[in-house]
Length: 79
Image: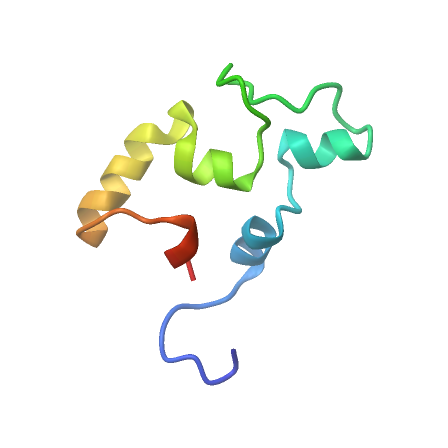
C-alpha cells in the first residue's frame, strides 16, 4: 500500500471497501435504522456494493463515470 504507483486509499474508499458507512444495511445491524432495504425500492439491502454498482438512484452517475474512464467499473477492479 505504501509504494502504490496509482490511486489513493482514503477515508471514502476505506468505508466503501469495508461496508462501514451510513448504508442502511450496516446501520440496521446496530439498530440505528429500522429497515435495511434501499430507499430507492430496489428490493435489496442498501450496502456499498449495491449503491456503487447497482442502485438505480446512481445509474446516471455510473454512466458518466463509465464514459470518463473509457469503461465500466467492477467490484473486483475498484482498487
